[in-house]
Length: 147
Ligand SMILES: CC(C)(COP(=O)(O)OP(=O)(O)OC[C@H]1O[C@@H](n2cnc3c(N)ncnc32)[C@H](O)[C@@H]1OP(=O)(O)O)[C@@H](O)C(=O)NCCC(=O)NCCS
Image (cartoon, rainbow, N blue to C red; front, side, top):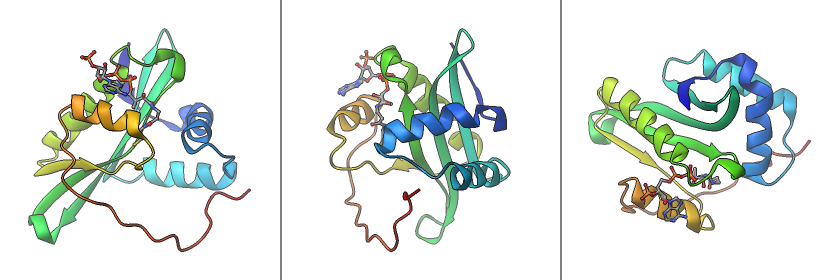
């Protein structure tokens, strides 16, 4: 299994991962636009886990320069391992890579938010060394998933 940076050729597989992750259809053209834009953003890293030339996992980290930390903070925005490849330490390997990126970028902290309903993911993140220290509050402003 290797971990590598994502590129535009990974789009179709990652798009399918997000349909499973979000549990709904997603507008392919908008997804592609966002994917391409973010690939060109030097504050965003997309990484892939690949096993025998099959893409089996995806993770992302965004870097933010924050006043309340007076420095860089890394936020893991997305993490997904293909169902039949779970519990093989691929998620952990993706987290390790995202943490290494954050450390190289001199971040003070790495953090993530996870939906309250994803109770399995919470156990995983705790196993990886994250602590549940904050509440996250959200307010939907417009529908983004409609096709
Ligand atoms: C969460 C997810 C990325 C974990 O990936 P994974 O490859 O199955 O996890 P790993 O095999 O690397 O697990 C690493 C460690 O966490 C443990 N772990 C995994 N899932 C766990 C769970 N639900 N509860 C407690 N521990 C868990 C593993 O046992 C392993 O511990 P070990 O090293 O002692 O064996 C994967 O289950 C997934 O893609 N889920 C659906 C999408 C999702 O919820 N993403 C997160 C969005 S916030």
